[in-house]
View 1 (spheres, rainbow, N blue to C red):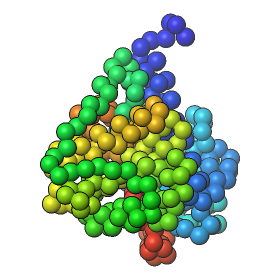
View 2 (cartoon, rainbow, N blue to C red):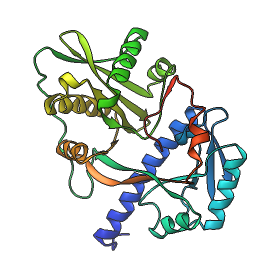
View 3 (tube, helix red, strand yellow):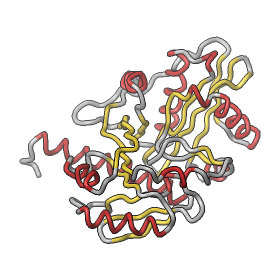
View 4 (cartoon, rainbow, N blue to C red):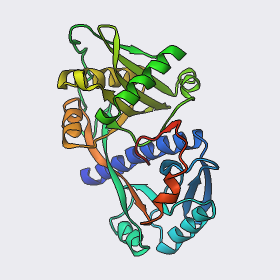
Length: 298
């Protein structure tokens, strides 16, 4: 171990971080009711009643170095027995590039790819990020944690009004109705941004042991500025650190997202990739419960 090259050490640490992110997302999906079944060298996730893509997919089993096309096909066959679309999702970086060819050979196509940005408290390699300093909020602006049902209702009011101005989309779904339980269990922090007493922005931090995920962040058009975005991002990261998170991750949907997160000390860390069978999505999405608000999918 002492004779390992710096490149090998970095590769091992990268995989460890990506495994933590994978474990975080899988734990969230199971908490939301997805059932995990092992089929050979893959895990098949399916929800008994909810067809959302991020709760119904096939993924290689943990610590599996390689999965053949035949094994993937067995998992897809099992997923289809539950009436779900053929879908494979995995974190790029945990499997060689050739795995993507295996999926294409099964006639699957890329459905989406979500870049991952990581803020690691102890640093990546030899470089540790600076701890976030207190941000001076613009005049009349306050950021508060949601602690009661009234705050939850205000959170959803802003989210739905700001939907087309979402700044950060997560890789786990948002659901109406489970917020208070998640808040009490310490699995979630919701933030409200007020401007002169009126709610104008929201953010959500999903917490699983020592990992935290910025799963939602939005501001209304009238207040969407770089200063407001940075203030909200900083508040979320600081709260994650205060709750002993050693790793915070967020999706980098656009160049602007990634640039802003890098300025806070985040680094680029691969992607969550989803492949699915073309032409199967229509039957799946026509049954989504209107009370469920999906935010991208892993």
